[in-house]
Image (cartoon, rainbow, N blue to C red; front, side):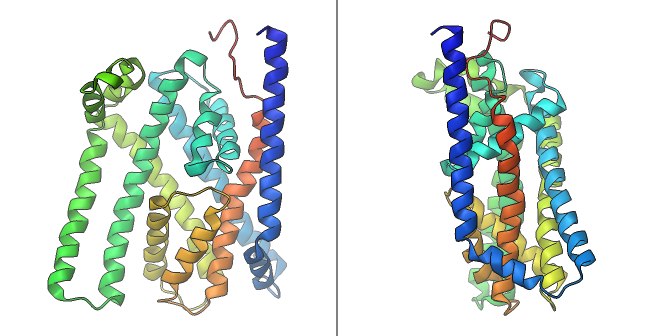
Length: 325
């Protein structure tokens, strides 16, 4: 394929991605009645108050994804040096591709196509390390919160409850030990003949030392605190009578359940709504408000960044160039 044909083909792919993304977003927003409910909840509230609170939540969205960009830059330090701005471009572009691909698989492509071709597969492995770190925290906090939920709201025999606590401790320890010994994956993959020939791609796992994995986990923790704060702010603002500890517990459970279910980002709002509605029903009767707040976070954290990311789609480098090759 000539350079000219590559350029035309690349432009067509990018245009299709952008059109497809906007089509998906448009239809999902139009069909989402929960966003209309959120708008009705704001009726009668002072404009200055609405602007201030929504503005803070919106600002936290940028903090969240800028932290992810910083984590991505840190993860890539062993593979290919990229600037922070380049990391931001790849993160937002990945969000655009993630919204219409199962389990956010498009996010990997959106990021690694900003790398030189020979480092893209290794980049996927590095990104997986960061995602595992986020999953570790989500599972640990979620398991602890679920344990607290069972203690407070589910009447169980004390022996069964004690067994659940042991299971929670083992569950959390497993994720901690696994994460800080992620190089074990390298050894496991080397033990199979089929995967051994691809060791140059996943050998990067052996380069992440415990101190560096801890640094990555701190980025993940900062992100967890930020997007938890978004939910917390809206729930406190629009639903009266909720205790702070109960909100934190329910938010952690919500994240935990979401992480265990396969989904598309655009359809994920349905899973969020059902999950939040069920668990929050134990602490409040404002079901409409709970679902509306959840839908608004989905709009701010997923849809708006995906729309912004369409600009960066046109910077994707599918074929590389003579320098990067």
